[in-house]
Length: 206
Image 1 (spheres, one colour):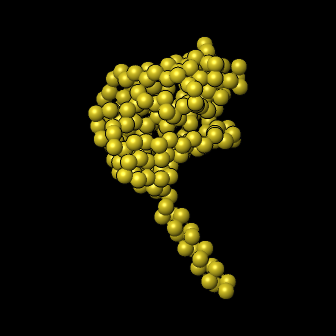
Image 2 (cartoon, one colour; image 1 turned 90 degrees about the horizontal axis):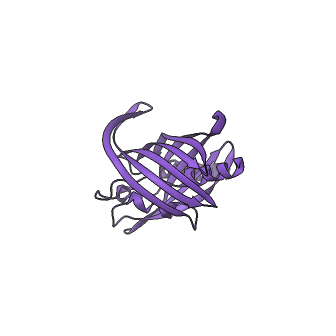
Image 3 (cartoon, helix red, strand yellow; image 1 turned 180 degrees about the vertical axis):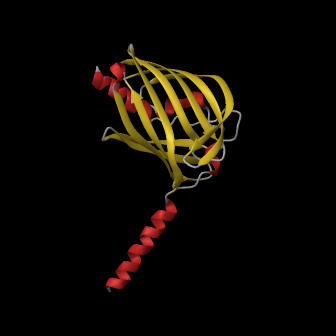
């Protein structure tokens, strides 16, 4: 059972539950290739057992119609299978269509409940966020999963999720998950600088 619970945690953790209300402009419309957000994830299972890890969402490609997001990370030293998702930026990003982010064959129903506004501090920076609560029901891998989820998002970020809290019940076993953003930015400048230094070193060696 612990293995199956762990698999369920990985499946949900790898799903990029980042969305704004369906009547707002798609936040990924202003994203650039290389934009990323890293989150610290803590999951508390039955008997107080805690699993800790990190999740990183990265924009890997973009055109006029869609953005492709790659989700990767580690939980207790174990790699989470890399997942990719294409987001249609010509339409609002609808959180009730989250089924595209979970394992193939999974049945997902997401219902939005409430929303509000709150200031959240990440490191030395404070964000104006909008929070939304959802109720999720999912069937995947022979398991029934129910969850109450609260997501905080900042409109100024191209990957908008700042924080997420989720209370889950997986086949009768209860658990809690929390994700908090620890870093965001764009990887392309660092990548370009690294390549330039590499070229300079080649010239020096000659």
